[in-house]
Amino acid sequence: MKMVGVFLVSLTIIFSLFWLVASTRKSDTVPMSSGRYFHVWGKVQGVMFRQTLIRAAQKRNLKGAATNLKVPQKNEVEFYLAGDNAKIDEIVSFMQSGKDLNSWGAKVEKLVEMSSGKAFTDHQVTTDNVDNFNWSKNVEFYL
Image (cartoon, rainbow, N blue to C red; front, side, top):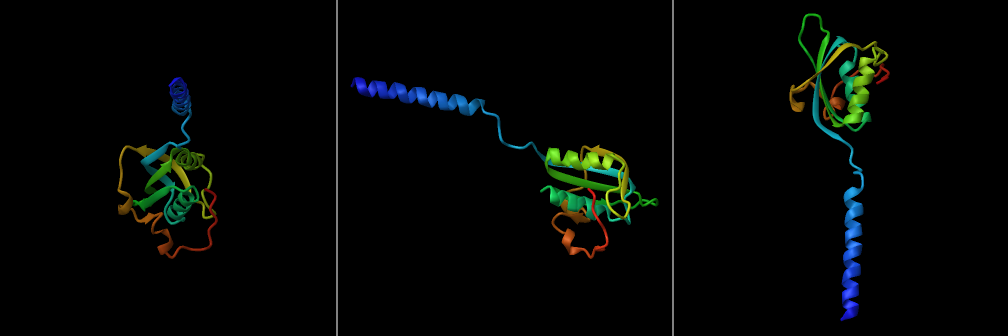
């Protein structure tokens, strides 16, 4: 009987230690975004901006979508990114740097994060359909 008591006490201590370690261990999960919406201005239409953005999203395992906005200046695009927030921030930071995004001279002059936007499936180009377009092969992506 004494042996069973010692065993139960030992088992309780082991379980308590396991629970303590498990509950204080840092999470291995990456902060994920359910979706972030952006509006950009600059040299972003007619310069492979949407394909550049979507390829950058694919390279980082993000979900992405983009649409050229119908404005007379042809200088606005709305886009959506979802996934690892650090990778989204990496794309946004590169865009805000003012550097060319590709060999066609796509460049963002202004970027604003919006609180809401167009649904993923309502965009013109997405990570799901980008390969269905007849894009020029003569473009190098820097993003």
